Image (spheres, one colour):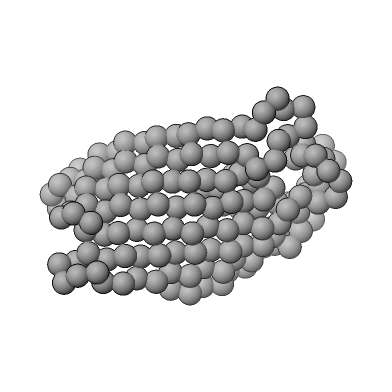
Length: 163
């Protein structure tokens, strides 16, 4: 897979903060690349992914309570890999990426954060699936008046039965 996407949100970016009425268009361009390789004849497959994104206009550091003057960083990137059928009916994957303060659209990445994710899935039967996901996040820059960089994790267990 190769894809270039451009997302436009007219008049939604508050470059000086939400208390200021000034609004600008928010435009994000992202390039995504994925490739897969069969590792054996039994169905084991490696899938590698990468994404690089850039916001064309970003808020000011002060709007996000970050140190410095001017606009926040505008870049985001991630890399990952999944192995399907690592063991029979088991899939596993990892993902790592960073997102500057100006990256406002990601489902997985918060602005001003780095993320590491581990995923595991077991397809017990065609109808029953078990999943586990763990995420570790850390702020890249300490916010003004914050005593430390925020760090957190979230863990999810899910069982799905289709009928």
